[in-house]
Image (cartoon, rainbow over all chains, first blue to last red; front, side):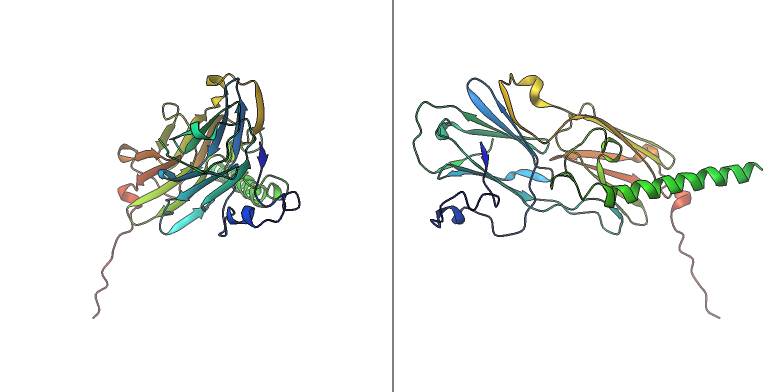
Amino acid sequence: MAEKTTTDIQATPRTGKTLATREENRYMVPPVDIYETDNALAVIVDLPGVHKDGVDIRVDQDILTIKGKIRYQPPKNQIRGEFGLMDFFRQFQLSDEVDQEKITAESKNGVLTITLPKAEKAKPRQVKIKVG
Amino acid sequence: MGTWSLDFISDMEKMRREMDRFLDEFGSSSWTFPFSKTSFLPGRAARGYPLLNIGEDNDNFYIDALAPGVDPKTLDVSVTQNQLVISGEKTALLSSVEAKAIHRSERSAGQFARSMTLPFDVNSEKVQATYQDGLLKIILPKAEVAKPKQIRVSVT
C-alpha cells in the first residue's frame, strides 16, 4: 500500500482528479502500522485527541483518506508546553486486492484500526465508511 | 557542609534537566520522522514520553499527557508531595493479529515512565486523572500551603 500524499506528484498523471482528494489546510501526519494477514490488511493509526465522531475515513478513486479532527483545549496559563495538536491527515493508494465495500474501522483510546479485507476482483466506486 | 552538598546536587540535577531539554528541542528534531513528536520511540524517547502540557491556576495544576494506545489498566499516576510519576505501557497490537507481513511500523510500543517535579506540593489525596481519546488529563490540587494568599493592603 503506497503512501499517497504530496510525495509522488510526478508519479501520478495530472488529471486534476487526484488533487481534489488532497487536503488544503495544515495537518499532522499520524504514525501508522500496516499489517497483512491472510484475509485482510490492518491499518493502525495513532490519533490522539481525536474523538470517534471526528474521524473521517473515505475511499475515493482507490485512495484511502484518513482525517482526524482534533478536539483538544490545552490547559490555560501554560507553564510548560511540549506538544501541540493539529488535525490529522494521511492518504494511501489501495491496490485491486482490497474489497472496498467491506472496509471497517474501530476507534479506541486514540488509536484507529482500519480493516481492509482482501477481494478477488476490484470494483471502482466511492464508499463512505461509518466509524464504529 | 550539609547544605552545600544539597545545593551541589540540585545544581547538577538542574543542569542535567537543561541538557535533556536542549537535546529534546534541538538534538532529535533534525533527524527524525515528522510524526516523532507523537510516537513513542523506545530507547531514545522512553524517558521523555509521554509529552506533557502543564497549566496552572491558583488552586490546581492541569497536566495533559499525549499517550495514544495505552492500555488503561497499565496506566499509573502516582504523586508524592511535589513529585509526579506517570507510567504505563503502549500496547503493540501485533500480538493479537497474526501478521503475515508488516508493511509499516511507525507507531512502536513498550513500557514508559516519566517523572516530573512540580514547583509546589500538591494534595495527593485529591488528584484526578482521566484518560480519553489517547490523552491523559490530570488535575492536581495544590496543597494549602502552596496556594497564594490574598493580602489586603489598607491605605491610610
